[in-house]
Image 1 (cartoon, rainbow, N blue to C red):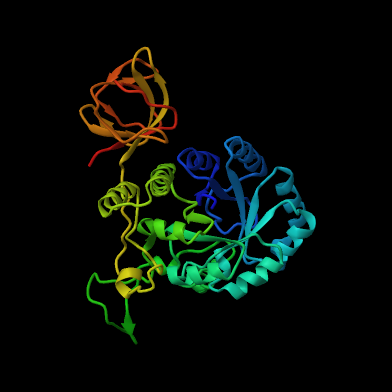
Image 2 (cartoon, rainbow, N blue to C red):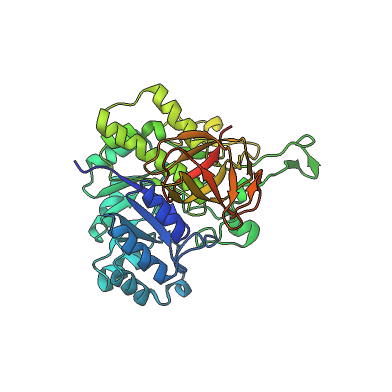
Length: 401
């Protein structure tokens, strides 16, 4: 049985590299065309080519999202785009269009076709249809249960991909047009305004029913299925997918690293205790998160699991430094500042190969002037910090609560 794939999102080249370094087996990215995340940085072709080289040197994969619901105007330059993706050795496209699938099979047969969750696939009969078209993988709808995944797996031979973390749609994925109606931004062509997460007042006629300062929104909690990873591995699904091409580098590093550790531990030991899961959940919560739930996987979702009636984002300023280098001779790290911190703060270093390591900052030195500082307050400022233990480029530093 092949080891399950951990698939991470990336909004730009830097984020993609970080996701791979922190444990993803593959990344999915959007190009300037055909992608649903219009507000993500998205990739020029040269960036995708560079990413493919970076990933393939590490035996990892790159998938390109072509998951808009296309209108005729959207299909201009489709053939040349597909041919280019094949030439630069993209591993697969993720698409929600039969037109794109059939054209890809004709002009770029080396590209695998993965069917996007935007197609809301919840049964094996639909999967059989896409298998006949030549697709090698289906990304299941986020609205299926573990029991349904098991039944689907027994009735199909192609790969199944399942979402495990990130944003959930208030509708079936790919079926919502609330944004279209309220903002004229097409949710299924890259323009979703996330209208379900707005705050609303309830009126009966012209009389406001909601009380003062009371408001509602319809948005779903985010998905966090970390406790279900053993079940999904046992079901032999092919890939576990994290959502969030617009998330920060720090968010991706934290979340990807945590799921990597869970997957590896389960393969190594065969079980994960409740206390260990609590530690993993605490680690994930160090990233910026909204309220979370396990979504539909248990099959017993309720209003309390799926909906919340207040905005619940929890942005933090925990991420304070990115490691550029470490001087073994002088035992000091070169750090690029991300958020305010001061001498005397307790911080935590972590990285792809570095366990969480706490340390009290005793000295901060401006890299350019050599001046000793009491605080680091300027974004992207480079500074030296004496450290008695080795850190590496791409490790990160965060505040301890």
